[in-house]
Image 1 (tube, helix red, strand yellow):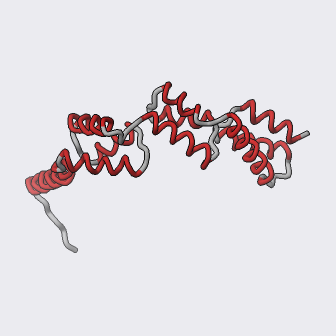
Image 2: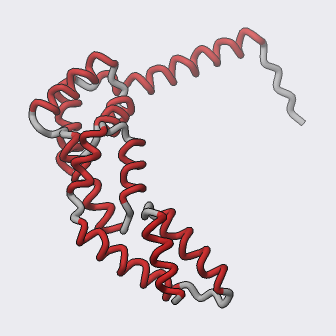
Image 3: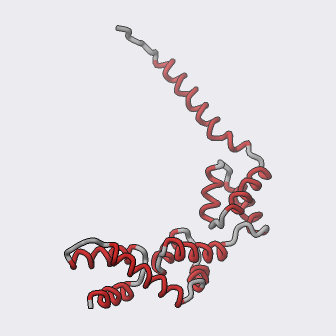
Length: 182
């Protein structure tokens, strides 16, 4: 049996060494020049529409200080790599057409990304009423047919819960459930 005896001074030395190593590890990205960081963020924004919050999070991950982050965000705005209205419109179209989200869920997700109210309004204008209700009809029919529950009350609850979770208006959901039960 081997017993290790560590003096308190050795422990302090190892702790200081570990702290210095971690500090060096986390500040290595600080060596990233402003031009390099800008190029990375231009590519990041060109790949897919981004909101300010996502870009700011990415800049924090790169380890840039606040003045550099602000400078890069301004440069991205000036070069039209970053545009909140364009992001909101693209987000609303994509989530509605691909994930079949309703307006309530889209609005809540945009608010969670700190998108302004006028931009949210513009985003919702991307969804035509005809397309919106057509998507709701197709989705509701598909969901109703896919629920295999024998108990009608449980089936109704599962149907309503699913559509409400997707962000569809409760009036639409309850009108549809009543028409399906008739």
